[in-house]
Amino acid sequence: MHILISNDDGYFAPGLAALEKALQGLGEITVVAPERDRSGASNSLTLDRPLAVRKAASGYYYVNGTPTDCVHVAITGLLDRKPDLVVSGINDGANMGDDTIYSGTVAAATEGFLLGVPAIAFSLVQKGHAHLESAARAARQFVERFVADPVLPQSPVLLNVNIPNRPFETLSGPVLTRLGKRHPTESVIRATNPRGETVYWIGPAGAAREAGPGTDFHATEHGQISVTPLQVDLTHDGLASATAAWLARHGRS
Image (cartoon, rainbow, N blue to C red):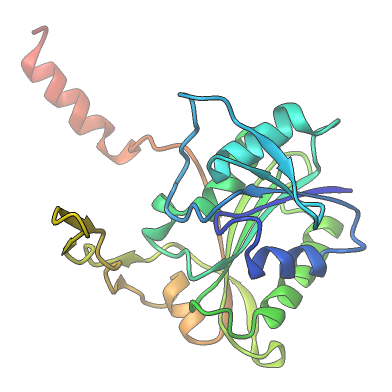
């Protein structure tokens, strides 16, 4: 078993170190992570410049690029062979509902999935690393189960796992969930930099809007480890007939 670990908080992040330590003994482990915090980088690839890969004193590799860059470079060039599993995290903060669109943590796992490797993204719901060791222990247990009995033995899967900030003994689950939805993000925050220029900070994420039973929001609120299987196909099948009818009405332009 060869496990590739990445994240979006940077190679120095406590969550990355906790995850790497927790997975020791499950096989060969390689860590390839961004050189700095790239939270919110989503699935972006760096195409306008070359990427540098360096090795830290910890043995971790770090890349001057995005989480997607890290996994892509690792699988397609850095590693001698394709890993058996890609694990991303443990993120400092939830990746639930609409967060998954922007998340670099989920993106790192997604890149592994797109390259044919089963992948799991782990996030700790509340920022601040409270009960990080508990989350790492839960992640270890989850990976052990996944390795021993994969969801689809012949096909890669992409799983998004969110762990409440609780002592390990009080965690419930894991439970199957669907992505909830948030209210629209709050307005940008206007500020002035030292040069007197107006700058804008992206506002906080919106509060949960669809957070009923079965959602990731509901599960974690009740102390359960949320597990959401994700897919990459963005085709809106439900809109196909309406789109076809619209095209037929307008004919050739």
